Image (cartoon, rainbow, N blue to C red; front, side, top):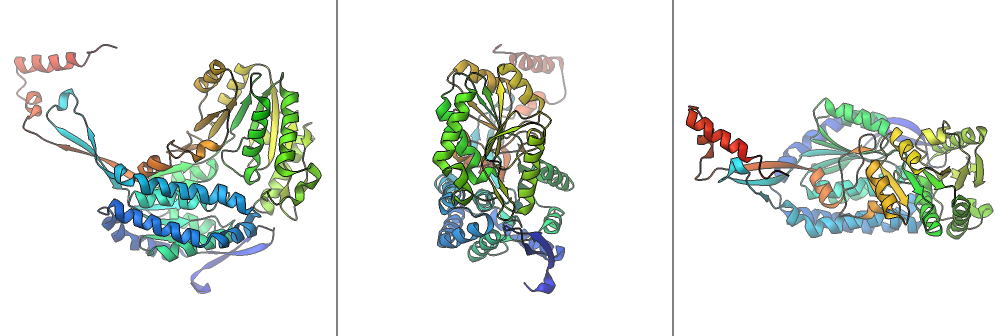
Length: 496
């Protein structure tokens, strides 16, 4: 692609320098979209074996670039090789394994038993590809959140256009190389670019849009989709709370939360955003957190050089986190550990705070970084009310050995997902639907739920020898009316 075919935009790169990001002209996007039209129709009749073969080819191409991926992630985010494997490669490979193993069963039409009014008729649910789909992926897990949905889209028999984030250019470029090596552009293609590219793609009448990102941008995606009545899956975010009650295993809770919060430097949509800790165990919890951080990342004064700590994605987000931290401390919040910010290297230390004012930015905005407010409580019902007063979060975490209390929290709150005595790991469970609710998302993904997200569930009914509609057709004689009334009365039984 020549420079004349692209529009250039400067953005802040991973080290705070200016990289060149090219926006693809809308006419090229339109041409790619149209080119996938015929292929989308052909893929409706593709077999499970054909779809699996494409996923296997993608898997081999991905693994062939393993070492190159290490370099790309190091360039974009200074992410360690182990974290690349654990948070980027393993989720995609597990998604592939799941789809490859179960796709044939998922694709089979599902028999549906008749109801009282449809006795004698046969009914099935057929799963059809939605058609041409658009996948817009974010920067925080640029491989996982791009290729994971793609695997489900391919399994469901769709074509796809991918738009990765411009904020991780090295990874996006490499993913584009992998896609180009496996797929014809009429089936799957990838376009790099910034906001203008995303806007031009959203103007096209796709059959489905799968977007992962912030609630604010999710609203824009949904508005654009509404113009074409395009279905959407929105994987968003929000402020995922954690609760540690007085019965909890404090050491376990602290160690687990320090892992879940600071993996990827807190740049995780389901990372614990803040933690409510009962006053009776707060001091022990804080000490256990400090001990866990030492174990994970070494002594506090050595963490700036720790290679296991991913850096913030760019200078703009580093500065945003500094402003949030400064706002909290200016209102009286106390830093228990961390607080260091190095804007030249996009480093923000793992930071724990207490005494945070409720109207501080850190409690009002999604943090998306390594800052964790610890909030003391004595009344669990007040915590539940506070959670319910805000938008529904993507995740909620409860640490307790009191099953009745845990059930009370789960019953009286709403979130996309929840963990009891654990955090974050529910994302890795391929047999669970992963998604948000309202402000934190619409729809689900992973495994069978990802297959369904990219499929249309078509109802197919077949008539039989019994023509039940005759009993409900004119002329409506008194005898026929009496029969219809008896049928209506039957539907009251059994009375539960």
